[in-house]
Amino acid sequence: MKKELLEFKKHVEKYDFKNLGIKFKYNHSIGVMKIGNSIAKKLKLKDNEVYMVTLACLLHDIGRFDQLKIYDTFNDKKSFDHGDYAYNYIKKNNYLRKYTDDTTYDTAILKSIKYHNKFKIGKCNEIELLFSKIVRDADKVDILLNDGFKKFSEYETNELEISDSVYNKILNEKDISYDDTNNKLDRILLGLAMIYDINFDCSFSFIKGKGIVKRVIGFLKAKNKNKDTLDKLNIIEKKLEEYIERRVNNGKKV
Ligand SMILES: [Fe+2]
Image 1 (cartoon, rainbow, N blue to C red):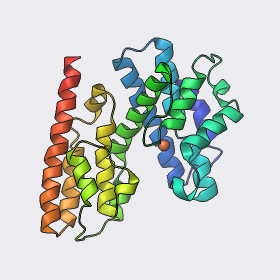
Image 2 (cartoon, helix red, strand yellow):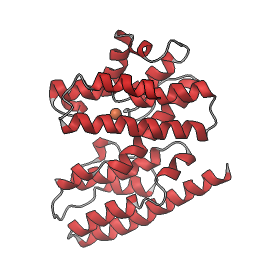
Image 3 (cartoon, rainbow, N blue to C red):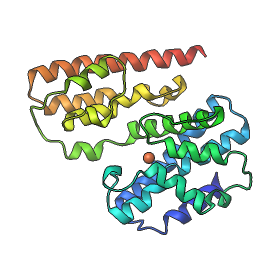
């Protein structure tokens, strides 16, 4: 992917590379590319499919750079849907031709980028669905591994309570939508509950042993003074750890 990385860097360099947000999304794109490549290989895709889905992973957040430049935010509600924007940008500029002459997978790449940030994957055929699942898994794994610190830095000692819908969804292994959340605590838990939306057992190998749940829940417990919340956080921690363990073990059987 050397040539592709150079092309992508050339694109990002049109923006202010000193801006931390730009740098963060550039590194995230590369992280997602590496993870997606490895998932595709674990799933034993054909070589050209591995290449194409790796490319989709690299380009999945290309809408973020204009989003930050124009609106100075990564909040889609305050600007534009960055998946839709990327889809239109790539299409309009024939941007995939900078990377490959093979047009066979254009729709799969475009749709996986469009759907990567949606609550659920939209209408797809088989290959589009496979690409979408891989891009979404790689994106979530990279976010779980590397994100959160900014959110944490703004998080102060509190007595917040976990909203019922958030708590019940976590215990029932359902991913949480933004509409379920009422406070900062809920929104950090939303980030953790993303693991329920990870498609492939093999994607769990990246987060296994990294202590992500323990670290995040430990942080929340240290900051919270509400007895009921602390009890719930302990239960959530156990639930999420068990879920990860189960998916990792399923992956081993394949
Ligand atoms: Fe994204």
